[in-house]
Length: 83
Image (cartoon, rainbow, N blue to C red; front, side):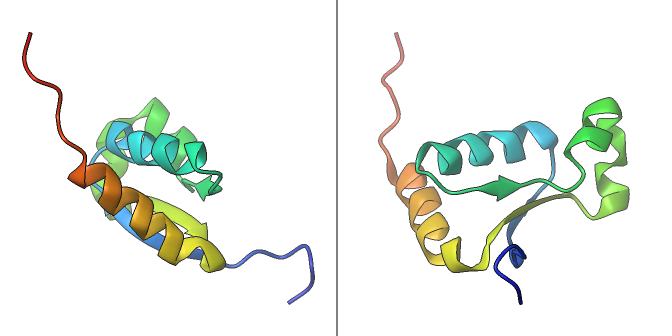
């Protein structure tokens, strides 16, 4: 593999584009690059997601462990009390 090639690994599959975009924002805030291969197609027609097997959230192979840690810590975060 050359220096400019990137091996992407599927971190998770989401049912909805907005869910994948939320996870993408969490990961990018931690400096982890994310690729949603069908982001633009599903942005035009979200109903196609089941036909694609969901929304695939990919990260660089070397970032998988850190990405999992980020998503786990986000799910462990306490929720805000109701106002």
